[in-house]
Image 1 (tube, rainbow, N blue to C red):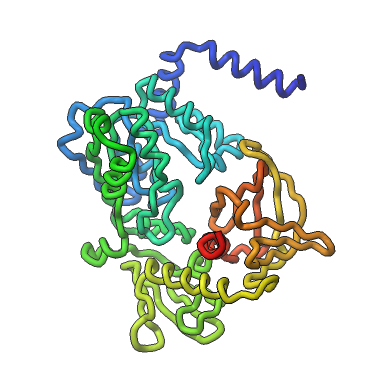
Image 2: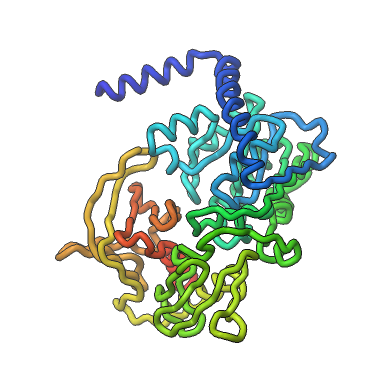
Length: 416
């Protein structure tokens, strides 16, 4: 046994020797201080209005706290407005950085690999129930790009059925327009977070997992654009359109991919000149005259996916649709803090999947074997292939990583 392994075992033994009540008290004390500090800053900074349904009266831990994932600050915003301390299930990527990992664990966060079954996480959730804790989960599995609630993971509904503890929902409105996933800067607007009791243990007992899923999906459904068409709240900021390249990749006028570029509040296709302005209401307006072909980011995202799928379907065998130079490949394993750099080469997309070529060496990742693909840090592609954790990083910091996520989805729809 190595010295590192021995030290880890010793630390684990020390942790397990501490009584549960003492562990919980220390965690709540540290987390409570963080929560208190955030409560002085975040509600004022983001102009948050909290509201609570009367049916929450008498609800005590353990219970689930579910929310729609709109904003990078969601766990903190939702925790500040909740009566009880919340232990969140969080992206395991945050635990790869030593200091951040320490802070996350201090706050009671649980690491979870996105879009993959994780038995360690499930066991941790069961322990939280036994300790009468609040379990915070975003059932979408990731943050929304357009502000539209994404399909919920069915595994969450099965977990609700199994644990049979109350389900509280916190529905956030305005979070995505305040800080879009594709943006670097937040906008000054308003955020509304409403808490309500969705399910009691007695109700869960009589329901199937499918019925729970349907109820949860309805409770967390939110369309940011449709909501703000009526609310008419301005989300003001500078350079409102900048970095749309990370999400919107197809020109609706000429159909070219990755030819759009942002500048301040405008988004322009360098191939055909099509230009729109992104407004403080989160809508697009034409700059060239007439109407914008898509006046909102949700419709544009649906249309670009359909276009990409058509292009992939028409692609001859062996021919590449997407190509990026100077893409670095990193490799490691789940829960490892450091991913080692393997090679840098040209990344291409064919009907088979992803290919990375450096000189005479080519690594191929077949679409049917890629698991848990997600976009971290705006445009870094993380996924699993077999037991390996892989990462693709672009030298071009404005390159669109999301187009590769859409391409994988299209390949599976067409050829699986």
